[in-house]
Length: 73
Image 1 (spheres, rainbow, N blue to C red):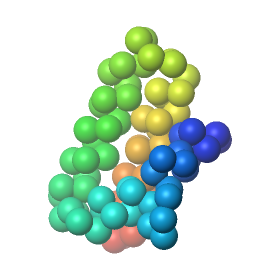
Image 2 (cartoon, one colour; image 1 turned 180 degrees about the vertical axis):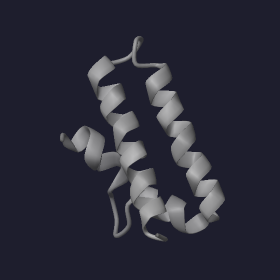
Image 3 (cartoon, rainbow, N blue to C red; image 1 turned 90 degrees about the vertical axis):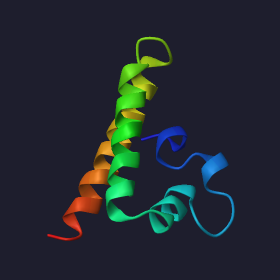
């Protein structure tokens, strides 16, 4: 997958990736909601903005959410 989806440069500057900082700052339920909101957002707008890229971003957040949930299984 492209860096634009997996690790965009504007989210990976410094020692910590933005998504990791967000996860650390939120409760588990809040982080689940954050991921779900982004899945909805990118799915919702796929017809209007770079369709394949938007769906890859939605899939990225879905995979991140699945990985997050499976950590506790």
